[in-house]
Each structure stands twice: as C-alpha cells, then as structure tokens.
Length: 303
Image 1 (cartoon, rainbow, N blue to C red):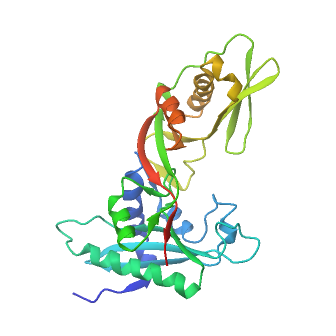
Image 2 (image 1 turned 135 degrees about the horizontal axis):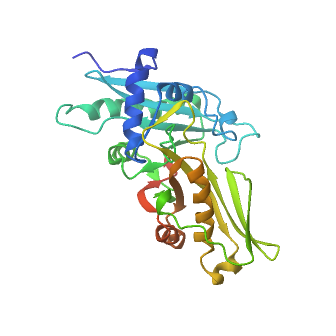
Image 3 (image 1 turned 180 degrees about the vertical axis):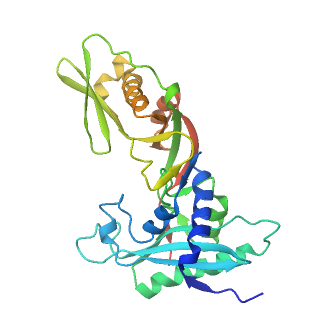
C-alpha cells in the first residue's frame, strides 16, 4: 500500500467528494442532495453567508486517500482586522470534515481520517490564529454544527481534543399536508410581505401586529438537486407574548404559510429551534412537525 499523505483538492476529486457530502446531508435531511456544481462552488465562496463570507482570508480544502476512498476537510481562516465580528476575528475553522464511518471492508479508515485531522490542526498554527474552531457547515439546507446522526465525525473531533462549548439545536421537519389549516378568527387579518428570511405573513387584530412567520422557498436553487418534491425553511416564527392567552395563533400562522407553500409546490417545511427552549419545540410538534435530529454547535480546541 502507498504511504498515506495529505494533499490539496484536485478536479478529479469532485464526483467522489460530492457523493461523500451527499451521504452526510442525507443522514440529516431526507430526500436532499446537492450537485457537483454546488460543492465545487462552495469551495470558493459561500454566497448564503453574506455577512461572514467576506471575512474569510483564505480557503483550503485538504484530502487524504485510503484504498481509493477519500477523506476531506475544508478550512477557513478569518481575518484579524476590526471589520470582522468578534466571534470570528482571527480564528481558524474546520468548516466541515467528511469521511465514511469505519466498516469491515475498510478497517483502517480511521488512519486516514486521523491523519487528515492532524493536518487540520496544523494548518491554523501556520496561519497563527488565536483559536481553532470546527463545525459541519455542508452546502445543504439545515446541515450545520455536528448532527447527532454523524457519530463517526463527532468521535473523530473528540479524539483530536475538540470540545462542545455551544448550544444544541433541534432540526424539525413537517409535511405541509400535516400543518394546520388556515382558519382566521373574526377581526383577524394577515398581510404577506418580504421579510428578512423569506416571505413573511403577519397576523393583525385591531391594528396591532400579533405575530409573524417567515418561510424561505428558495432552498432548491437550480444548482441543487432535491429528490422528490419541494422543501422550504421556516426562518422566523414570532408571537407577541401578550397574545398567548388567546391561543392558537401559531397554528393559524402556520396554516397561512401552508396555503402559500402549497401554491409554491412545496411539500415539506424545515424548522430549527434551540433544544433548551423545549416549549417552542413542543408547540411545533403539536402542529405537525417531527424531530429529525439534534445538532451541537460551537466546538473549540483548547490549544
């Protein structure tokens, strides 16, 4: 067997890398895959991250190969100047790391993964950054942090010394057909506008805004290929705390959004909530959502 070595991305890697990324995406969100074009483009920039992407100083994609099976990682150093937000300023981040889990046909797969992880730890030292972080920000909807469906990636990071220091979020999914129907109360009206995260529906009564929901229907962009029918994301759901006593407003907002999603040809809606806010998660599950997985955000290396 040739000696293992770490090397940069080659054009010939693009198909196997896309397959590997799609295996990880599919373990989080059912029926979703991304194209080769999406993967290769994401190695150069992240247009969805319009705030943090301009802060990136460099992009490095590294590979190790074991018996023709790739292990891959994408690393980003963030600039140290004052324009960069304090959380990101002068850090080196392993944006994602993907590898197959250990298997009987590839018993030494951990060797390649550990070798590449060592390179991921060494690269930030060469950048001379103040801290080393890691995540799992793959170019697919609702894939971020370290999802619980990737125990092999979590074990790899923990072997390398990374520790979870951030929040845990619940990723939920609902069939649009299972969402509540839109049945407004007398005197209640809904406006549709453009919101911060997509199309916004705001409920009003007696001239007062009671709450709003935003849905993003642009997840299945032309360069992405989603198996099955459409997918949307619930960007925001906010209810005025003084209206909770009236009951049911969240369901009515979801019903209004569901009407719109059906017109858009969307049949599934994603949502993400902080695990610590169990009440919010319970309200969504009562409205037709179910938990897909939990993901742990914020991983740091002590050195």
